[in-house]
Length: 362
Ligand SMILES: [Mn+2]
Image (cartoon, rainbow, N blue to C red; front, side):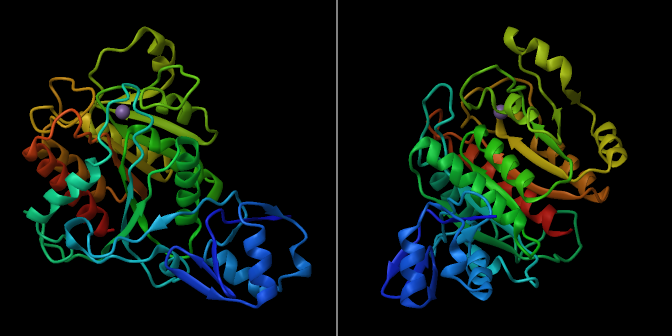
């Protein structure tokens, strides 16, 4: 079996550099790696010993899957001002047991094509009004936090297809790693869920549930991956069961047939019962249009009569009390093109706070 060399390795003398990682190798190996970046190699045994391969695999310089790993740690500018960490360093550390925030500013799946690439940055600015979740408690909950929440940085915005590959590659690395980082991906539009789920499925064979809190079903037939077709595409990945919670938008004609095929639940106790009985790991996707637009106007497709922040808190608490195995989460569709409303972003900041805190009790 061959291996893929990371697309983004750089070389400095005999050092191979990827993001914050800098590995000193022999001239022969460094040259070989650099000359083959982005390629599939299957004759590497003439160049690399098993120990070399182990190290290079550990730092995502080599990978069993196409490797587009490109995550930059946030230096001094993290969500809530929490600790910033380098994922490639934490990746092999079995002692690490974090909730990890990853910023994915991919907006190119927005079907309306009206988005603000600065949306995550603006959200981050409002999180400075909120206490650091590592050193504060949620209201009504007195349990001491057991896991650290860390900021693992951001993907740089680049070309659409490349970014999709990078997201998939990152998700694969997160789930393939030796530690137990529970990722919280911040979008971006809803289409980031698709490469994330593909990455998870590459990393392990188990069946999973994709639960999405969303005002819409996102089941449109579309040749391209968009925020309107993302769940349709996810439902086609084998071993993924799709559940919608709380849709209230009108179902588009083209979604009708697909809509009958997926499970839609609108009662939290029924949802928990269903997930517990199925006994599958749970991935949660939260489209912020699930909430009422009066709380969060900074979204692309507002629909009235949404959920309140209080109801959501209750849902989260019930999910965590039920001891369901939550393997990861995304929070998507914050779009400041639609509105720069500051309290809307602050509300999203508090939702992110609740999610990170809740996952940290695991
Ligand atoms: Mn959506």
